[in-house]
Length: 475
Ligand SMILES: Nc1nc2c(ncn2[C@@H]2O[C@H](COP(=O)(O)OP(=O)(O)OP(=O)(O)O)[C@@H](O)[C@H]2O)c(=O)[nH]1
Ligand SMILES: [Mg+2]
Image 1 (cartoon, rainbow, N blue to C red):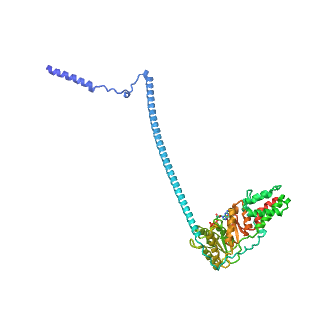
Image 2 (image 1 turned 30 degrees about the vertical axis):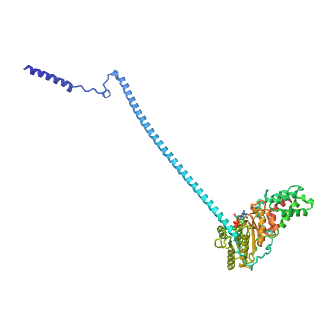
Image 3 (image 1 turned 30 degrees about the horizontal axis):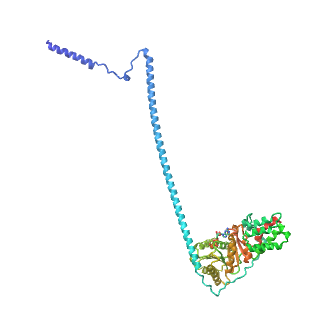
């Protein structure tokens, strides 16, 4: 054989052997430690294997635990985030709500302020208008009344005193609680004479109480003089005697008349006059209620035509009492309204016409002339009318009450006085002064705002109410 071919064959054989060992007969690749199949260990190596297994399990547990912890932490973080977001949302909502509430409050306050200002403005305008109206009324002299109609000054109607059973002493006493209380006029009088021994200066003390309770200087002096002369010197220390003397003198002074309106003529026309706010309209409503209860038919004349509210006030009362109200246009002549009301009463056969008039100061001549004109108009509508002209006086006006009474009495033939708001004064002595100095009888007393709080005046009932209880204590 050719040596070259031999050499080639040898090399090829070597190459084939190398390839066999390197590629075909290659040992399996070294596996990573973890993937290596567990070698069967010799018996002595077994505990070592268990230890390893345990370690592996521990490690796996650890890994599992770490994973769980991680998950838990992630969950907790998620929850915390959600909570924080919720809290923030809530806080934002709260802030928004608060802001809305504040805005609402501010709006309400602004509205209230605006309303108050508007009301203030309206009141100022009303006051201004009233002043202008008053000035206009004062400037405009009332038309001269027709010469043919004269205002007749008649004596007040004589009213029989109430029978004892009809008297409502307890009611009157309750209404006069302020005057009969410790600080009141009659309470103080009673305290003076209730002492065991009356001091020599008793009359001075009595004088002080009388003067500070609106009895007035003249009437006080008259009262004390009568007591001084009526009682023996030694009787002045006798409480019962002094109390009795006071009681008798009061009865004498108050006994100039009394009782409610006398429904005689058909219709009987009653005119209510007085200063602003004395209680004219309320008294008309109260008398109207009482007459309706006695089945008398009544019509009211809204003679206060200067205030729209006055007409509405009377209309409201008319509805409540259930009697018609005759009114004129705004600013109408009150004399005309009264004339119309009387004409209506005549044509419908009604029993009583109650005429309201605007409040006026007794010192304003044109306004007092206007009252005379109303009275004349009534006389023109019905012969003899007005049958009653009642002056309404607020008892809380004190000394001014007498001044009012005097001037109204000079301007008009008054037939009586309605003394209102006696429940609102602790003084109450003005009633003695009015009866004593004016000689005009008190016909009604007002002891409250309800219709049943208007009492037909009865001197005996009144004296019993204020002196009776104390008299019994002393006796
Ligand atoms: N406590 C008490 N209040 C009374 C009495 N009489 C009237 N009043 C109150 O006095 C206020 C005035 O009463 P009015 O009847 O409006 O008086 P007026 O005289 O008509 O007033 P003008 O029309 O403004 O002149 C009202 O609030 C009445 O309720 C009374 O006897 N006792
Ligand atoms: Mg009125």
